[in-house]
Each structure stands twice: as C-alpha cells, then as structure tokens.
Length: 72
Image (cartoon, rainbow, N blue to C red; front, side):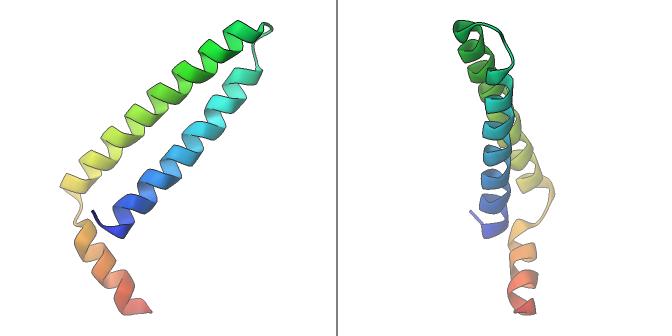
C-alpha cells in the first residue's frame, strides 16, 4: 500500500469520525444519538474505503508517491 493511499484512508476516517460525532449529538435522546452516530460512522467508513479502493485501481498511487518523493 502506498503512502498516498494510506494518507487518503486516514483523512477519510478522521472526517467520518468527525461527522459521526456531530450526528450523534443532534438527537434528543441518548439512544437515538448512539444509533445515529454509529450508523453514520459505519456508512461513511465503508463509503470512504470503497472510494479509496476505486481510486487505487484508477490512479497510479505508486507513481504519485514517486513524484512526491522527488520533490523533497
């Protein structure tokens, strides 16, 4: 796995957790907040994993890493 792919996965995971925690705070009851946060987090993490997997097949992450290493 390339560094670009790992970086994208970490970025999307952090964004998913932020959005899930915001969604968990909105409902009026504690139980509804837990369900909303959990479902939002799971859906976003699965979607982010699928997106990074698709981009890994569509984009040459290894070549991007090579170009980025050449810059430094």
